[in-house]
Amino acid sequence: MNEPLNVLFITADEWRGECLSALGHPCLKTPNLDRLAAEGTLFTRHYAQATPCGPGRASLYTGMYLQNHRSVVNGAPLDARHTNVALEARKAGYEPALFGFTDVGADPRRHHPEDPAAHDYDGLLPGMMPVVWLRDDQLSWLADLRHKGYRIPPGHNGVFQPKADFPGAAGRGPTYAPALYKAEDSNTAFLTGEAMKYISVRHARPWFVHISYLAPHPHFIVPEPYHDLYDPAEVPLPVRAASPEREAQQHPWLAHYLFNQHGTGASFGLTAGDGLHFGEAELRQVRATYYAMMSEVDDQLGRLIDFLKAEGLYERTLIVFTTDHGEQLGDHWLFGKYGYFDQSFHIPLILRDPSAAAEGRRGRRIEAFTENVDVMPTILEWLGLEAPPQCDGLSLLPFCRDEEPGDWRQEAHWEYDFRNIIDRKFEAALGLTPDQCAMNVIRGERYKYVHFTALPPLFFDLERDPMEFTNLVEDPSYRDLVMEYAQKMLSWRMNHDERGLANLRLTPEGVVEHKGRRR
Image (cartoon, rainbow, N blue to C red):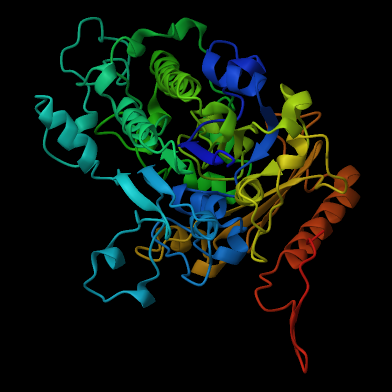
């Protein structure tokens, strides 16, 4: 009997695409991810399809663009009619096990109004078995800390408070002092250990494990000794205009959002908007702590990979490492993952296909444009399953083998929906209706086009302006290119309209279905 095929699907949260030492990062060290890339395939132009976490993960788990799954913001439910990678994997006999979180809101039409599932966007992806479910309340981890004797501060996210009056913290900014817990008891270490326990008793049965790490999502905090791992003096400063006012001149949306940033702040008690006022020392330390969080994840992944090898499972397991979206980290005066800049959408992807077909291709770097909607079809092909018609992406396994696909996409695509139907502050400030609060991006090797539903577009020449400071949409010499990319975007959206029943025909002989690829 053949040994079972396994899936280890790992996501971090808010990990920027250039943040691997294998890609020549100026200070960050990720030796274990580098090792995984050397033994697998590294995709250097990989992009998320949406932000923030909920929409980004909806695209990752369903293989669908935001225009089709329509879980447009955190708190917008995912339509129950859509399948996902976990539900599909069950068709091959797998019981996908979750360690962490999925941030998928339940379809309220399937639940009673008093059902807790209808009150929380931080829901469970249908089909996942929550072995360790770490929602925003972090209950399983907090219980583990309490069991070990820790006294946890009260309040939401109190566990992420830094140590008070920590020696040397003065002048280092709010993210320097370490966490209250030891490294071996961190959120990241806890999830890794629990996943290893689960895997250790399943040798005779195939397994599908999804580890969803919170790091390096803010708050930016790490335990000792990671808090002092990177010298802030060696950390690159953010790329941005001379002032936020100067940056704001680029576009009306940016002019409003820069001074109204929202979301989790860099440190406990702060909001994302507080980063606008950081001085150089604080900025450097925030970035140093962000990189330290990545190093902690990398160390735990090394522990996990060594465990798989020791258990004889490494050569039977497809390993996927990616994230839901990136992080601005002060670039363009922004913290968080909102907007149209590459820093929020360019993310890492490493695949380690253990099959013999991939043996001669290990260590390759793929520069083709790949997207998170490709991850679900990739996992399903590994499991011997067809991707459902809803999927907008395609399997990436051919890139890992001697079967490199032709007619591949020449650009990456993503969407950002900034509606807020609760208080409608953005809508009021910009004179928009909720359905007008959306933008689409098409990003090629040289040019990038950003289209807003009811605000002016932007166009960047990335060869001359790689950091996206100069909007060329009104430059006469780029007028034809702007038109070309606007037409490309229209064609892309038309080609990827939701097609659930569009390719079915009812005939006297029964149902006929066209299963061809979209492009």
